[in-house]
Length: 405
Ligand SMILES: *Cc1c(COP(=O)(O)O)cnc(C)c1O
Image (spheres, rainbow, N blue to C red):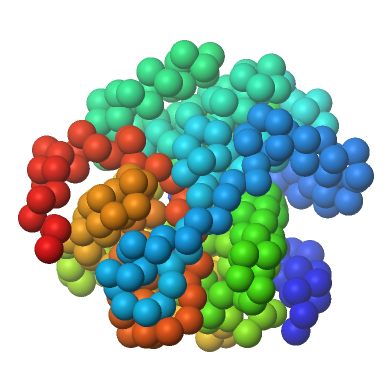
């Protein structure tokens, strides 16, 4: 199947990638999500919308971000060559702004005045607050009080950018409760506002829309890589939390003779609650308004998850990944906390790039793959920079001397 045919058929008009996706939401929210789906279907074909988004990407976000050849790291790993797509150099330091700017522009076209979202670690909240400031929109970010305490610098960033952070104190007071609270606020005010999800997850049209907005990563990287080397890479690799940076990176390569690897967090180990490797261990279920694979406890509820990278600890995964896994088009592998930390230090010391702990999972897997492949090339999506993680890393692992040999 060629690339255009894939995009045309996946998802279908109901938002399904094969058996995964859809809109599994209460009736009160149906008109709201249908309005967004309809608006997106119209606007994504509008040349005015496309050229405005292109201008924003160039002038505000600083795109295209470069592709960089890691010569020293490649040499350390053997003969295969590792390249990075530098999303850490995207404005705000990660890929998330790619879809937040798209969502903000959509809100503007729909005449909405307010962006509503939840955030866990605060990365999505900061990206969305940035988009809201750019477009002159109000921004309301729901966040569990446990996370508010843990992620104080991101709460401050959101507030400086003019967003209102709504503390959520019920239940475990983390991401899941924040999602419930944001959905509730949206249901009460969908005429004036738009819900902006943080990854390629949630009810249709979000998995489609976020994938499309993130595809700029893979489209640029594919072109840049061919220009640099004259060929396609042999392998493409990205970390998978909800699955937005990876969907953006992978989709432009689906019809190419390229091996694709999604890297899940194995955390502390294989026991339930010790990882967030949804594709590796999950089974079919529903969470946050869509059907996909889900890490479940014995009662069929979303299981507790853990990863050293807080952006990866989500018990479900975008429906497109569940589908690409089922089709065997993408290989899903996993990396432990310990392996990610080692890659974090190796990349910092050998290349002068401090990666986000999420992105360090993709780097760790690429390093293993490079050793196995011996020849050829691996293009890795470096989804974000690691400034946000340095305090945690130093407290738990020091400055990394033990990882250098
Ligand atoms: C949020 C985040 C991720 C995980 O989200 P996806 O939707 O799976 O891409 C990965 N890397 C960084 C830097 C993040 O902030």
